[in-house]
Amino acid sequence: MLEQILTKHPEMEFVQLQINYLDWESEWIRSRACYEMAAKYDKPVIVMEPAKGATLAKVPAEVEQMFKAYDPSYSNASWAIRFVASLPNVMVVLSGMSSLEQMKDNLSYMENFKPLTEEEKAMCFKAAEIINSQTAIPCTACSYCTEGCPMHICIPKYFLIYNEDMREHLEEKGWTINFSNYDTLTKQFGKASDCIACGQCESVCPQHLSIIEYLKEVAAHYEH
Image (tube, helix red, strand yellow):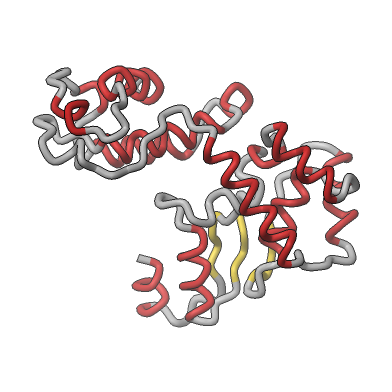
């Protein structure tokens, strides 16, 4: 869709994209693919959600320890913002700040900005691996479960957005874009609550997941 827009509207001066190191290879967000498409058409990028709504400011202890061991002067959020600011085609990074301390933190590394080294980029991708490994539902999105589903439920897609939400700080945010993503998917596929517990999906799941119970969790999260 982005390529269609840029082809039909060459007058576009920039593209605003959600980019952060956690969504860089996300199947849903596709930060890298969209960034590279903008670069292909020589359109500068304005970055939104560089810290994914503060998710990357409150990383797991293992990630925080890795960052602090490398350089204790950098905050968790700074790694996320520096990651996107280091991308050559980025023009502006929109960083949400809710306190004077956060503004001072941003200024401390952006005023005389130095792009990430290759080693530092690798650490960001390692952080993403750690965060992504801590998933609520260990689905590999093989999609074996969907072919015979009588209710046409897009099980892997629902598990994907649910896992993303379980990594968010929902007690503070209350809502994420995945609530809209879920509604969009239900216009084409069955809802998680449409599951009739026939067990077809569980009989073919290579991971032997309790898909029926997980769908109940998804339905409780998005359909309340």
